[in-house]
Image (cartoon, rainbow over all chains, first blue to last red; front, side, top):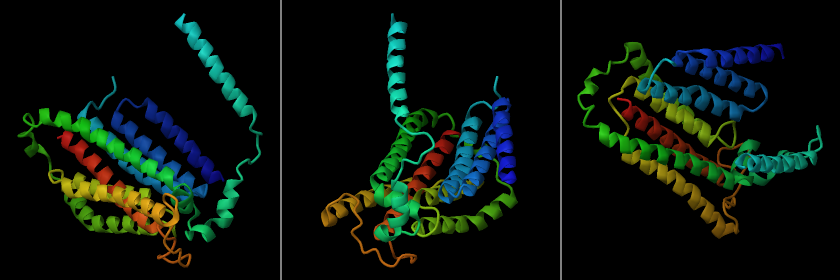
Length: 78
Length: 234
């Protein structure tokens, strides 16, 4: 229970950090961290199917696609 | 005038929503169907993983819709990127030599891991009716193996024709099995194959076949999306 609370706290901090970063690569990586913690929480909530999808798509593929998009456009938010 | 009309429409919508939500008792479980799935799921479908029995048996038609949405997204992305690629190709033909080689650790590690990740994804979508996971999860892991390969060898790409053939075959098998169910059992996507013994790999009738089809379809779809995006970003 305490472990889950700590995870949720870290998740909230990461989410706030993602919205504050001016460097978009940092923002994407913190978003991937949010997805990873979400998948761990899904596992604790006894939904391993959703946890698997979240880890593979949310933390893996979406991060890659967003980084490709950033590489193509601009790295720093104005 | 427009503002007044929009406020009136919003009030009507809000009233309807409040009326609808006031019918739902707070804190009570109104969904009796979950208990039915838990009690009868294994017996009726033969799939030990109850989520799979819901996704592909009781709600198989919804899954067909989900697959279609992903397919349309891939087609749309491909169409948008294809139009722009035609213009860009002439400009960036001499740019490709600039791409740096990946480091030795990344190259060796990826070459070692690539077949293992493919094997793991195949395990996940073949065992979708027994263990957590299934076609979508396995397909995403399948695509992530190709993503690693793209990161390490940016100049190479998969054979687009064969990957789109595999993708279309996955969709065709899904719809074809649904139509076969219509012929043999009278319902679209009905489980017409024998259910077998639960907890063995050859059980649950059509579920493993559909999940293998979905796995390949989703995997190749996401790989083609990544390929399109990367080709654009050179």
